[in-house]
Length: 372
Image 1: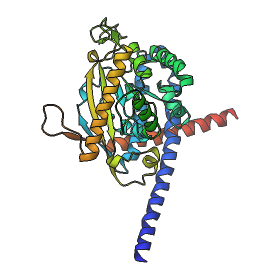
Image 2: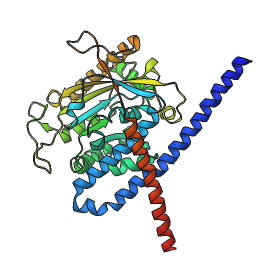
Image 3: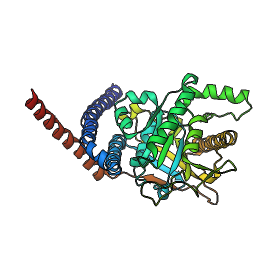
Image 4: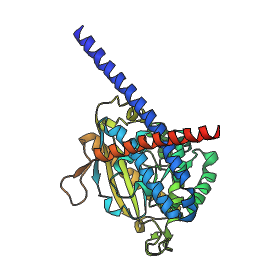
């Protein structure tokens, strides 16, 4: 009987905590997202007069919004440990980031672990499924200039054309630096069986922890954002100058990001919101490739991309067997570092969001009373 009461008490606490978290996040969204939109609406004259300053301000607020999402997981004990290359020193250089995709929690994990990477978050562009457009954060991503891609053969060719047009129109004009995509084109649990059948049919590697990537978006990004050489690779030596005239355009790096969850149990967005899972450490591994090493011709790029995901499979197999990623070349032991968010900074951002929400509520109420 005592055990039953103890279990009921724990369940009651989990449910109460989940309800409180949901209420807080609902209110957080209701004050933060409209405030973001209203501030940018107010700044539209600045967009016409000095667009670079406008997008600089927008990027700062965008980073704050993503920090709020990060804080939801942080206070529940969901943290990140990083492995592999230290990508912080290339935060001001242009890079394409390719990530394995296991669940909706992957995006939240990236929102958290990129917070301490300089200006990356405010200058990044996301490629995400078009369904995300209809979520609470979809309007923010739409304003920021992220690209929503429709999956499926019926839409594939048109979507790649739309992607190229989007990159030409928004990537450099808004001073974007990193572009993040999930080349697998869907969640692991949904694509694994299809991927394995495709691999068997075409004598490709059998993968369990990742799926074979799709080429389309990666190919378009490389061809659009990099200067091509005659040998089919891309160059970092050429490129037109940006608006400031002192930095060449063009991708400089491909960053291969591998996300691993303890016991291969992905963190989904519901867990991130309600916080019913025990404190969990998500592990993120980085590997950097200079853009000159990346082929841009379709067949060679396909082989290169497949090899990256074979390496991801090996990394994840090692992690699930040992609890850590393997050491890099030249190292005897793998070194890890805990990603830390500043709680004071998070509190200040949340305070600003709620203060802004209160201010805009009063402004709109006043305008309504004046007009009606």
